[in-house]
Length: 158
Image 1 (tube, rainbow, N blue to C red):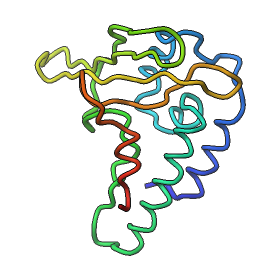
Image 2 (spheres, one colour; image 1 turned 90 degrees about the vertical axis):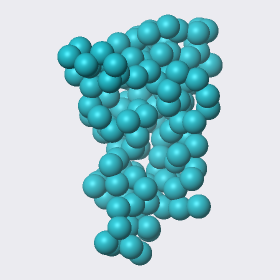
Image 3 (tube, rainbow, N blue to C red; image 1 turned 180 degrees about the vertical axis):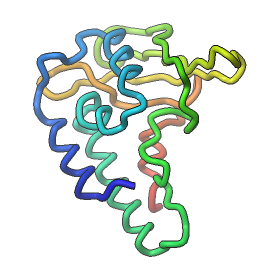
């Protein structure tokens, strides 16, 4: 598990605008799929400053829990959960998109070609990132409902 210092340094990069930042919800979904197995890339380049701060706070709380209970797996012991399940799908696809710009919802399909019934769909909530670029403001687990990354992060240490 990364140390708090490493995550916090990664979060500092969120504040600078990128020339290759996604310009549409579809492009943000494709960027997520390209980076989904690399959480550092997601955290440092594709999230809003507000989500980056929520991650920073949750990681800090997680580290406190881990130190207090070293024999127990802390809430974020598997990393920052940008998807509903920890399984790594061999394919990631952008699905339906509702809305445009900030507030849009982008379906992300996690696909297992050899076991089609094993896949699932999550949703990204589009927000405004550094320099006004589109960025991930939440990852909602499943095809409906409001359970997601922000709720989980807020619950760490409570």
